[in-house]
Amino acid sequence: MANKRIYLCLAHMSEAGLEQKYIKEAFDTNWVVPLGPNVNGFEADLQEFVGQNKRVVALSSGTAAVHLALLSCGVGPGDEVCVQSFTFCASSHPITYLGATPVFIDSEKDTWNMDPELLEEAIKDRIAKTGKKPKAIVPVALYGMPYKADRIMEIANKYGIPVVEDAAEGFGSRFNGQVLGTFGKYGVLSFNGNKMITTSGGGALITANEDEWREIMMYATQYRESYPYYQHEKIGYNYRMSNICAGIGRGQMTVANDHIAHHKHVQKLYEELLKDVPGVHVHAQPATGEYDSNYWLCTITLDPDLKIKGQENAYKTIVQGAVGGAAGVIHVADSATTDCQPNDNVEALRVFMDAAGIEARPVWKPMHKQPVYKNAPAYVNGVSEAIFKVGMCLPAGPYVKDEDVKCIVDTIKNAIVK
Image (cartoon, rainbow, N blue to C red):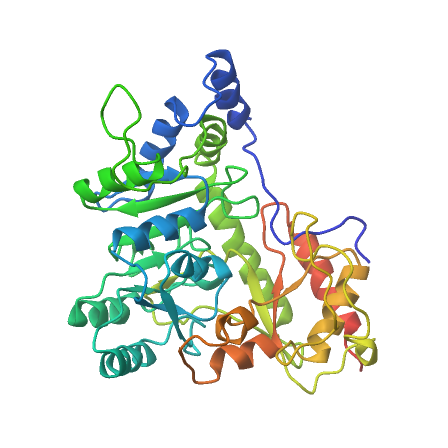
C-alpha cells in the first residue's frame, strides 16, 4: 500500500524558487493585473522554446487559445471543423462557441490520435454532402503523443484547410525533431495545474504570421481600437494571461526540460516493470524514429478477460464527489452506468488503486460518444471506443519517484486475480 497519495501529475515548482521571485517582482512593482513584464518575458521564453520563428500569445487557458485560433481561421455559424474525437472537450467545445459544427474523426492504432486516412475520407464526404470544405482541422497530441503531423499536413495542404494543432498535452513533444504546435497555422498550449509546466491556469497560442499575431492580440484584449477612449469595432474577449500567472510560467520554463525528461524516464520504468505482467500493456510511441512524446501521462490497456479484485462491484455506486481533478464541482448522475464506459476490470482497478492511495483515471471518452454531441457528424473506425473500454492513465508527474512507480506496479499486480 502507498504511504502517501500518488497523483497523476502535480504542479512542481523549480528548486530555486524562481516562480516566487517573479511573482514577488510583480507585487513589488504593483503589476498585479493582466499583462506586464512577466507576460512579455514568458512569451519570449516560449518563443525560444518552440523555435521555428514563431510568435506566441499568452492566454488565460488552452481553451481560449483554441477559440481564438478557430476565430482567426474564419470559423462561424454554419461551418464545420474536423476535430479528433479522442480528446478532452476543450478541443471541440470552442467550435460550438462559434456556432459551427464539429466533425469528429476517429483515431489510428499507433498513436491513438487522428487517423489521417479517415480525415481525408471525411473531408471528401463533407464536400460532397455540404458543397464546401471544413474550415479547419484540429488534431490532438493525446497524453503528449505526437500525431502523424506529416500526413495530416499533407492532407490539409492538399485541400487548403488550415490546421490548429491542439498540443495542450504535448508541450515539448516533437515529430521529426520539430516541436508540436509549429506545423500548422496555429498551435495551442496549456499550462493548467496538472500540465508539463503550469501557470496555475493558462495557455498560449502559437502563430507564425505577424499580422495574425496582432489580430490575435486584439481579439484577446476585447478588440479595443487605438483611440483615447474605448472603441470596439469587433467583438473581442478578455483572454490575456495575468502578470502573476506569467511569473509562475517564467520560473517553470527553467525546469521545463527537466520535467519532460522525468516523464520519459517514468514511461521507461513502466515499460520495464510491466512488460511481463499478463493482460497489462503499456502504450508507447511507434519505434520508427519520428516520434518523441513527452509522455505527459503514461497509459496502459487491460485485456478484457483480465480479472481484478472487486470487479463484481464495478459501477454499483453512483459517484458523489469530484472526479479526475475537477475543482469540487460535479453534477450527480442519475445512473452509475452509461451506454459507453470502460470495462468493469478497468473501473475495478481504478477503485483498487484509489483505495491504495494512487490516482488513476480512465482515458478520455471519445467526443462522438458524448451525449452533447450525439447529432454531430462522426467518421469512426472503432479504435477510440475500443481503447476507451480498456485504457487507463497512470501517474507520471515530477513528484512521481522511482519507488512510487514500483509501488504503482506492485499495486496493479496485487489487484489482479491469480
